[in-house]
Every structure is written in C-alpha cells, then in structure tokens.
Image (cartoon, rainbow, N blue to C red; front, side, top):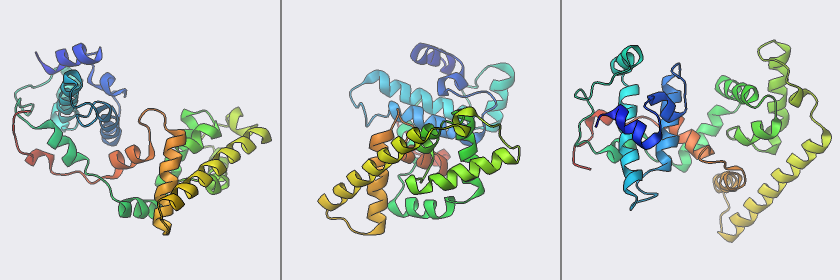
Amino acid sequence: MGLLEHCQELFGTSDLYGVLGISKQASDSEIRRSYYKVSLQVHPDRAPDDAQATEKFQVLGKLYAVLSDKEQRAIYDEQGIVDEEDSLTQDRNWEEYWRLLFPKITLQDIVEFERKYKGSEEERQDVLQQYLQHEGDMDAIMAAALCCTQEDEPRIAALIQDAIAAGDVPKHKAFATESDRKKKARRKRAEKEEREAEEMQKEMGLGSEEDSLVMMLQQRQKSREQGFNSFLADLEAKYAKPGKAKGAKKSKK
C-alpha cells in the first residue's frame, strides 16, 4: 500500500495537506509546525502499545519527507503522485527522524527566545495573524500569543491598534468594542494563573527569574491549552534548529 492509500485509510483523506490541516499554499514553516503538532498526538511515547498510532506516526514521517522536499512536493502538487522509491524507504527509523527534526528545547532556549522575540517584527506578524484568525477576540489572541502575560496586553492591543490605523488589518468589532467587563474577567484569569504559578514555584523551592518564567509558562499552558496548540509546541516546531534528518540511521521500525 502506498503513502496516499495509507493516508486515506488512517486519516480519512489522501490529501497530504489535508492530513496536516493546512492548504496547498502553506509555507515550509507552516508545514513543519503542522507536522509537529499532528505527529505529537500519535507519538510512540504517548501510546507505546497502540499499533495504529505508531503506524500513523510513521505515515506522517513519510508525508513530511515528501512535503519538505522541494522536488517531491512539486511533483505531488503538479501530478498528485508520490515517488515511493525515492526517499520513503521502508526501513527508516521515523522516530529518530522526528527527534532529529525536533530536538528538545532547553530552559536557556526559552529565555533567549523570549528576549529576542518580544518587540520584534516576527512578534508583530504573529499577533496580527492571530488578530485576523480570531476576528479581534482579545481572549483568543492573548491565549495564543507567545511569551505574553497580562502585563503585555496593553502593548499587544497598541500593536493591533497601530496596524488598524495603518490599514494593515481591518477593524474587527470584537476588538474595537470590547467591554470593560470582558477585560476585567481576562485580567482576573491572568492574576489567578500568576498566583498559582507562584504557589507552585514556592512548593518546588524555586527562586530564580528563569524558574519563575518556566512556572508561569507551565501554569499558563495548563489553564489555556487547547489540543496541542501550546507555547512549547509552537516554540519547538517553529524555532528548534533542524537536525540533519537525512543522516539518520536506518533500522526497521
């Protein structure tokens, strides 16, 4: 059975982009992030005794190998076929391939990323993308924004307002007419998350600023996580340096 047939059987569609929940026009980084999030749900570590989950994980690895290769992706886009004999070897260790693509990030990675990310053009583009996606709903925007706490909300709101004034994004009613009651409710949730993070930090005997950051992120993740769209998933998928996946050992999996 070929890759497309496997996708149909396991995911209900033979469209490689459809399996990842993205469009044919997706960028390389969007493909990478979507592959990470979908494959994380069926990673062998999560369900070691689930044969179908393991099979899905392997098929996702093959799918990404196609879409991440410019020549193979072009052939698939133009002809709707996959060259099974080119690089989709049956004895490749797809779990090792995955880990080479997504090495585990460290605390230092998180702190350094936050330092460079806040106030950057990349942050601006990410915030505006969330603004458009959620049609101005600040609850959803702040929940999805990377490295943001309640203290960052005025800055994020100002960033969006400036983009509206410049004509970069449309004015959504949900943003322009948000009630004070909704703002206060969001502030209370954020304050609760902060208190819980501080309590957790004390219980674990942690005291540094870096420890505080990690605990805040963990508590924020616990309170706001929806599926696998978490801070760490976004960060790892988008910013972890790719390993040399083509050099992975080949062994039967």
